Image (cartoon, rainbow, N blue to C red; front, side, top):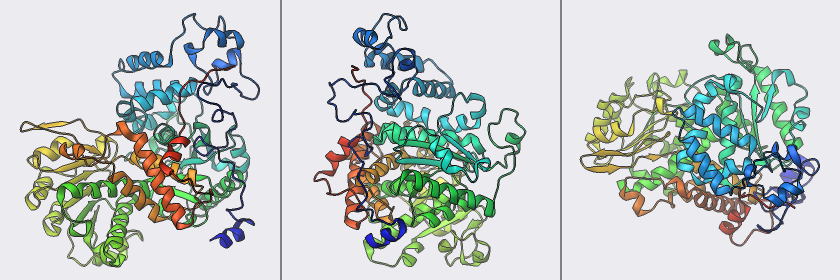
Length: 590
């Protein structure tokens, strides 16, 4: 391992200078982590921020929470009303204001405005009200925000790299003011949630994901970089929209696309080093699989749609076994949807069964069946299948409809990753309930409008026997006097803690065993109390504790596999993970 990396970069990753401090594994440029919580710090920007510039700096701005002493010292007297409010009171006021908005998109805009003027208050608000605000800053509201991004765009929140920048991407990266970047979330906007090609307006996805990296995983905001790669769009409506903010041309493909991505990946490593995590987000199927396959051996890369979704769903399946009984190998799985998410989940399930039973992967795949737009994936269709679907072609006669597939295959688990709403019909759910005492139904497509069925439909049509989870949130459902709380198989359970684990251990490559470790850690967080409500995932209110446990488990596996470069290994990885987490409380200024 070490000699391989020496050949790649000229020096061993084990010899690289360790610039990681506490605080999310980022070099402590501003001295915030070396100071105790009560010790005053200096609000540095390029120089000491003061006066009007301090109020315009989101990292250091505290709004009405500046004390009278701080207002005198930093030339703020007269620039603010005389009242001094605590951060808690500011938070209370903002939540009151947010709840007045009836339109979710207006809440989203208000939250983005807050992030741009007061970073710590934004993250404090999100952390303390995570179950209420997660659907605002991420799915489902972020989908609408991306659709209307051109109209609501105010100031850049990340880097835009287009075909115009080909040949000078390294220079563009250097334009970003922060230099110690450890997580990049990048999209080309071709497959935004279940909404299709939104081109340059897909920037809402990297921005949203990285706000969750900080709020849920504790990675410092200054270490996060959202990037949109604009190669055009095939969305005719956007091309004709006078307010569209991206390149007005059809998408580049083939060699032109590959060369731009190659330059981007090389520039990222050159500018930020070997250990920067690049998370691919919402790329179309054909590019997502190719990019992951091409760069997973040379860069620290992670595809949340393929690997993150797979990990969180596997955790839900392992957790659900406590309600269904048996082992994973005892169950039969049927997917509606055979794209990035579907095949990614299927592969991780097969891998986990293989590890548990010592049966070859080729055999364990036969417990898993996939249905795409043309019907059940079977051997007779092999010639026409995309390469990532071929491993899931099993011996069976052709079946066109999902309902017929359910009746033929008799699955115990039905998983929807189709991106098409209301495809788990009454007949399909009733068929699942007739085959199984407790059918597990996962309607994972986002946003809510694209969910394969609602929680109410799943519980009602199964006569209250289904175990249900979805990609987007649903309200609790009352059926026959019983209250059912639907789980949410949200990637936000996995990727923030997973990323923190990679960062704090200095991991240099993502191995499949790290994903299995993350799934196991998440599954172990569900309690008997959760199961009694029908929940297979723990509540989001404990997400920071969950993320710390996932980070510790992932880091432990990275050390075991020899992929971690931060030495010596910390003795207590959970405590170390918690100590690495960014805390958005106001600090006192000198």
